[in-house]
Amino acid sequence: MEFAEGRVSNVLGALFAPVDLYRRRVRLPSPPFMALSRVVEISGVPGTMKDATIRTEYDIPGHAWNALDGQASQLTLDPQGALVLAAWLGIDFESKGARAYRWVDADLTYCDRLPRVGERIDYEIHFGQSVVIGESRIVRGRCRAYVEGRITVDAPRMTIGFFTDEALEFPVNWVPRRTLRAQSLQNDRPRMWPARGSLERVDLLALSHGHLAEVFSRAVPADARNPSLRLPSAILQFVDRVAAMSTSGGVCGLGSIEAEWVVNPDHWAVRSHFKDDPIVAGPCMVEGAVQALHIYALAVGLHRGVSAGRFEPVVNSRVSIRFGAQVRARGQVLRYCVDIVDVQLRPDPSLVADVEIVDEGAVVGRIEGLGVRIVAETTNRTSGARNE
Image 1 (cartoon, rainbow, N blue to C red):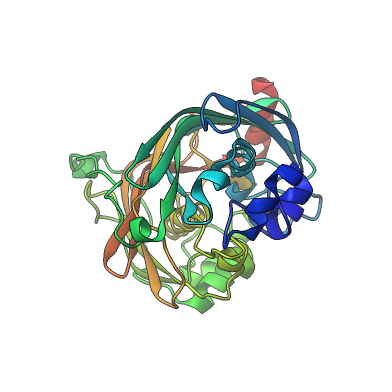
Image 2: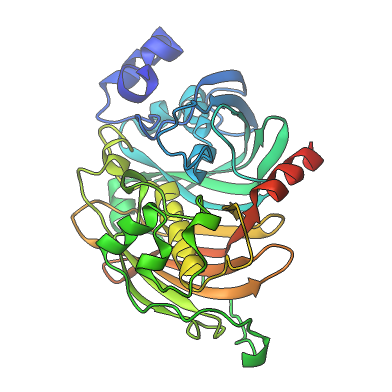
């Protein structure tokens, strides 16, 4: 908490007292976004910004604010220890308040189910290489997250950067061209319920209560069979409206959804990330993309034939995340343009999508290979035990 909102010298020692005088420094997110309980181990050579490692832990509280029926959201898997490691290595002495931390990219694989309340997440974060490009410092590394000893997320490649205001105002295009995908043959597409074309805020709130038939159709399987297949509560929703939805749209003809979120400067996701330098957190935008996929899955009845189901990530499949610009909160509409690129009904119903995140007409982020699956709770538990 002191590192996030107070004086870094009270955490890392008197040597860091000059850093407290800078107009900004590297900080952790403030609550409720903070997902770090303790630093277990830290090693490296200060001043080098490479060949350094930090191990941290996060105890998911039993009353976790972002949990849905005991299942924590993907926000709990954010490797926030990277910020502590960068500060400990002395990035602020180099930046002198003139640079801001930003997440650039990551290639990651989900290896297991999402964590549950009461469980502990162990993170191992390593900085490998570090280079200076113009006035910016780029750090490349890797990260693993373990839940109760099981590898849950493996990110063999991630990049963070420290950028001047000028570099952030006119960013280098870090987002590469999207992967070309061939359109699927029509007869290869599984039969699905027709999706409703658009949804308003009142519909999304109804979905947070699990009222699927009320929002979509009586043809959608009964709500009582899958009480946990719903959107999270309003405080965690990063979708305010669905502008369009199609079961035959998208680059592959498998479906598409365009969702919107109004970026309010007073939203906790902005105010808590970070003190003195508020921007929309990258993990929150990824969470919004995931929620758009959840909405589409419910709209098309992907959960038919499943009882006691939960949304989980698609495992053992690479997800590529790239950000090309920061998102400042100005009350604007952020759009998630989602193309479904794969649909599977067995062994678990699942969707995989490519997502473009658009801020006032500019593509600021791209996620490729983002997947969600619907897993029966009994299968979920068995899977976790087998991985142990």
